[in-house]
Length: 391
Ligand code: CMC
Image (cartoon, rainbow, N blue to C red; front, side, top):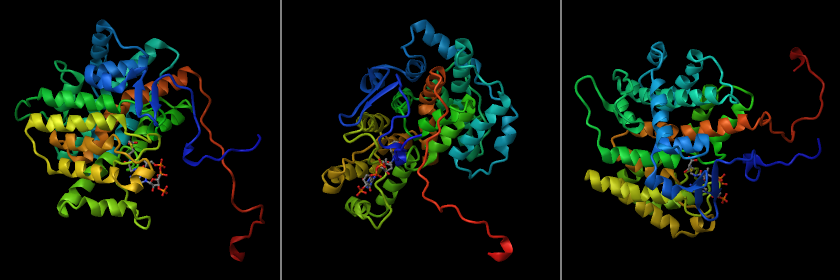
């Protein structure tokens, strides 16, 4: 009823009220439940932040220990899921496999959660956090042709990521604490970002009262695209290409400015930030720290810094307020940790999972209506049907 306001890409439309994440794009401020991202990245761990996002408050020590234990209880994934993985070619992109496996979890966990029942909701949260981490790493094991691995109950959640990815039957895998700390920080920085494309997808799918796994599977697909989470893989491929071609960053800045060229500087620009992405600042410093402490000298980090400098001094980027975003430096850290670029967006998904869950839960608890945008029809007016033999 009434006139429809057209807003492609929802640049100026709010879809909900939310208490989860505060983002000020002009000032470059990001807070989860009122806590600054800088402080959380420095002082909290990923499960603490997940609990905060999902349940609204930082957990007490007892709540946190219980949360970690309860997640552990749900880390076994049905063995029949392996048949599904077997059906994929080794070359399948891990994000495609992850979306399918997340969707397949609905078949093995068919009971849909009642979001108004706190106990049921808590169990669904733990189940999702547990199983998703395991299947996310299975996408890598599949691509390598390695046997699938199981969660190790003697290790923490983030440590388990390394264990699940890299431990082989041929011998124990030593987990480096620098690596675990870096991953913890990266997961925290990715954990929520209010109504971004994948989160909006999770909310809109869930708004039809589709289940949590089904909604998250849709979120994984939305995250995959290069304009969203897929940018981290695209950044690294761009930096590799620049390196291969002699490190001429000016050439790529020129290309990005050329309106006849579809090339964009990957890892630059953001729908909401018109200032530095606060996550990029933290990740840039973390990239330096991680490479130093692992004793790695990566020419791609130098190229990234040079590229950032040239772009930030360029009128095209300045006038459009284009700054490095979260994806610009994260790939350099992942690469230093030995994670292949095809897995970068899966890393983003593991980090974003608590955000998706928190947003799904908030949407259902608040009894939001089904998401159903309108349109402005610009097609043909009424016309008569012409039978096929007369066309
Ligand atoms: N390189 C070159 N030009 C750019 C770039 C870029 N990376 N980003 C935006 N522009 C230009 C764009 O061409 C447009 O110019 P004009 O006004 O002359 O037409 C102007 O800046 C505004 O861009 P837009 O595409 O209208 O902005 P948007 O809000 O629709 O898109 C974006 C935001 C993130 C999709 C876009 O900046 C982009 O494609 N960036 C590269 C991909 C990327 O890094 N994505 C990760 C985003 S952050 C984390 C995440 O979501 O995963």
